Amino acid sequence: MFSVSQMQEFSMFSFPHIITFLLFLFLCLGLIMYRIKLKPFHLSIKWTLFSILLLCELSFHTWLILTNQWDVKDLPLQMCSLSTFLALYLFIKKDERVFNLLYFIGLLPAILSMVTPELEYQFPHFRFLKYFLHHSAIPLAVLYFILYENYRVPKMAIVKSFLMLNIIAFPIFFLNQLLDTNFFYLASPTESETILSFFGSGIWYYINLEIIGLLVFYITYLPMGMLIKKEGYNL
Image (tube, rainbow, N blue to C red):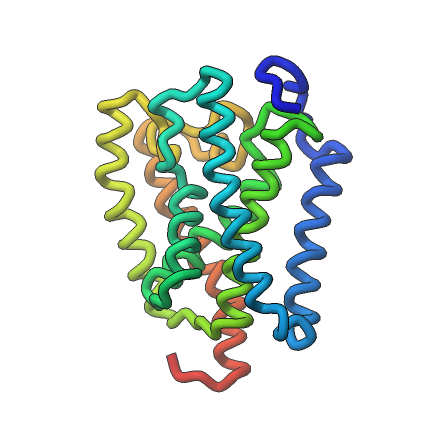
């Protein structure tokens, strides 16, 4: 289960992959449908998600260190790590601007990462379990903040959060050049075949990354926009 060399046969859309993703969808649906009945337990949900996110991040680096694999490329500077830190911060301190960014980078991107995961290890390896548990907890945390802490995202946040993400990505781009890393996948697409594999190469990779990124932000906002309209908010 914790081996470095065994169980390296992950197959996209295999039975474990599909079942794990469906379980995540059922959890999301359950959290939404039974939000009123679950309200008395919202603090338990809150700290459970907090613990899962923290343990996923810590256990991953612990496994890398104990198996002598840790490298500078494993610094927590990927999008999921940024989403994790934003969520952990929000569980402790309320901040609408931080949530706006988390909403856009932690909802649809995390779900897409589960559809086409960058993963080598198959179920029930630790890396498989950690990957899907981690990427499930991020959007579930976003749902928690919407359902139980009443966060809402104004339409202008699409542009503001997109610009903020680009500001964060700017130094990371140069850090990749310095350390020969691929944080935020700004140096190249993923090694395994994912959605990023279709973005081309060179300057077109970055152009497509920006266009698709902004499109993802807009699509992510649509359910929030419908919720705000339904509730009659003026945001």
